[in-house]
Image (cartoon, rainbow over all chains, first blue to last red; front, side, top):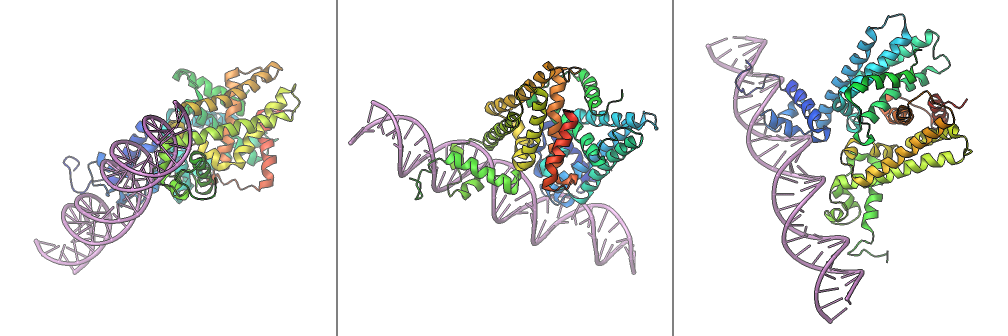
Length: 200
Length: 200
DNA sequence: CTTGTCATGTAGACAGTGTCAACAGACTTT
DNA sequence: AAAGTCTGTTGACACTGTCTACATGACAAG
């Protein structure tokens, strides 16, 4: 029964999450308000509180979705590479992550937003851990193949992890004045990741 | 006349900026409110508006100070290196930046806060440009010395710029679970920067 | 089919925020 | 001394997140 406006919304929680991503995509995370979402969904101002007790709750749930997307995009990028070549896989993962961040800038911004990090609930922490583990596993696999062996695994992971991060932060930031055509991005991403995980 | 409470504050603008950094250092940027600062300074709630028409104004001014500190810390770190060795200078700058970020986490967080970036005024943009230019100049100097020559200067700058950034983001984030002793940080910073700008 | 329970909505209140306009005191300039 | 400009105060407005009390719909037990 999804036609007429009912008293009960049907799946308000999902609708809120969806509308929230829209708002973030459009006007940024600072324009996000529970009351605003309620208004947009034609529901009373306190209705969202039934599903997200606090605004930080909503942000956490949103960020969890974001991190799952990041993990998925990163791992999917490695799928096309032959499984025994860990080094190329790691390279592909870096490109996959960076590309996702550049194609989903608002979501990336939301995921890395300080308020989100500060109030992270356990579910969110788990999602982040998942991503971290994926990267670490890939780095360790690469080292087992005899590459990057001169580095402490922790440092190698930190490095491999941070670089796409920093790049994504810089590239998403309009203040940094990197005005690149959408087409160039793929090449740029490849060039940059090549610096971190050289395949040649 | 700095003893008794006067009607006019003396230098309210400076006091606001100072108190704002304190608040950010203590409770984070999300806890910053104009009214709160006014309260702390024993001044009426609308007094800050005389000096910062909007909250974004205050954040912008604050961030400008932050960027100036960053630029200074970065350039100062290069001073101890012999001037003709651009490559070592670049390396030192990376360490200087990263160390500043780790020793001034709250300020760094404020400077990189999305709200700040979004509402950046011209002064702030200028301060950021200054920093960017410093890095670019150092990279170009390095390339003139015959190093990093295989890279496009723009990409080399982006890379050199982003890595300490990403590292600082990762290291400042408690969620990333890098629990390192204060002592280890210096070594860690050196190791990481060495990956980007190898001096050996 | 009735009944009771529980999840999910509404209405209203509260404290807090940023920002504005109207006013007032103090400093500056002439 | 007078006029005018900074810089402060007071009070208001619309907005926010969150709480409590209440209403309604869904749904399972009897």
